[in-house]
Length: 99
Image (tube, rainbow, N blue to C red; front, side, top):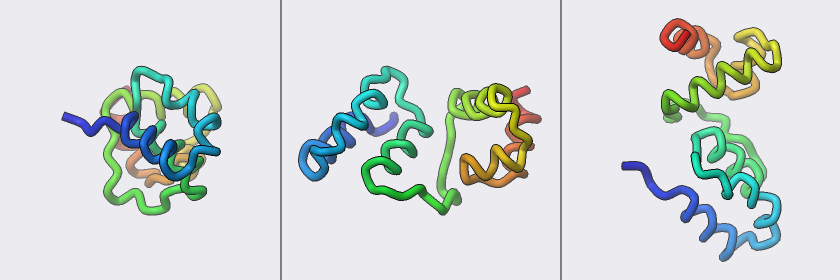
């Protein structure tokens, strides 16, 4: 069972950052709330990207979105790894497993 991130971020936005609520609303309206959406919200609300990916975990659907992003934007593994702040070896591993 996953935490209700949508509710958590709505509470944070309403109590501490109400000026950023309009900017985050399109992400919060999604029914499928993914790890990628959580990273985007963190970047918008707190103003920085997470540098440490050591403890990140992605669901299968998130990994497939990442790999689709690579195809759509015609990126190689190194460029994709830099964009999502992950190891290029991890990208290679995901490609072997899910493609």
